Image (cartoon, rainbow, N blue to C red; front, side):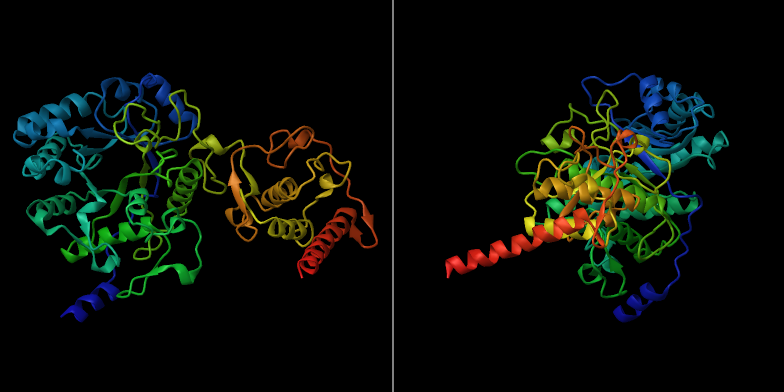
Length: 491
């Protein structure tokens, strides 16, 4: 029986289909000391080409400001209003009248979140959740808006038990009395399962079992991928594994045509001393890789090519959020609309345009082995065909005359020569992408805005190689000789 079930999982063709191109959206929280005015929020969304947002309520000022913007808006029934709506059809109808009909279609409302993570946070309200879903949907049907506006409720990924391997995942069975009618509702209304996915928390709570690169969507070699022993599907990141676990959990309950939309995911850029994973670099890496993963329609191992539309948590850092420092630092922007970091989005389309200035650089990692850095310089300035003549003595980037500074220039020049692809900033794991311009004095790096105005270098040649290449070979030889002499002295 078990073997038959696994074979069905392995060979069954899923009926989940994507009815539109996958998109990236952003959640907008308001727990800020200096929350921008709704018109400023909309201006930021337009400037950043963000076309999909999710609100945690149905704020009148925001819905008014969003009018005729073209931005697709998901609004929410707050948890504190859920009990009343779930107990009264007329209360639900009044809510839709006040918060949807008063603004639609000028404000492009596309979905309603009925509460959030209700099953795990408000067990006393869970019993009326499906009623609330039905009542809100019935109010939309009465206004002929049920095809234009979907109704669902976000679930936390912690609802999924035994989530790896994904093929063995199942929902917490203690919730089945609510889950089954909820999934029936989603299937009958052609809605989607809303899922909150937080690889950051999975990584932090795994006690080292989940590698950081696996949580951050970083490229990992095939032999490091996680393999589902039942389906032989390979997983290279936590996000895909959790989404597929949701699909398998639904399949286990005989629901195979409900798409998943990720309503929350992200990574904090700052944390307390006991939150080492919450860093600017990790937040940048996760969200940049997430955006590319979604917009490239990569899909998941179970459903390749079917992109998972996703909302990033969140637009602003929320300094009034209670709890650890990380809870206040999930935002892409501060309250003034200044990017917390510049996303690395080369080749991923026009979204979150805070990367359009191209201000990303490839530099040597802190504490990198000097010999490995020198080897990287040799390669970039040789086989990599980078023009490294600015590093020659007397040229703008010669000083400071040390291997780290020279590696920064050589690595960044190669990175930009290769179109800023993530793979081009590796150098045997000695390099990393940075948003800080390493240019100094008259040494202008290729990624800098002033690079086009910098004097064009004129490479010199001598005896079949560039002067710099010969100089680098001599330096490398001197390093080797120095090491040999040191060993002889020790002997």
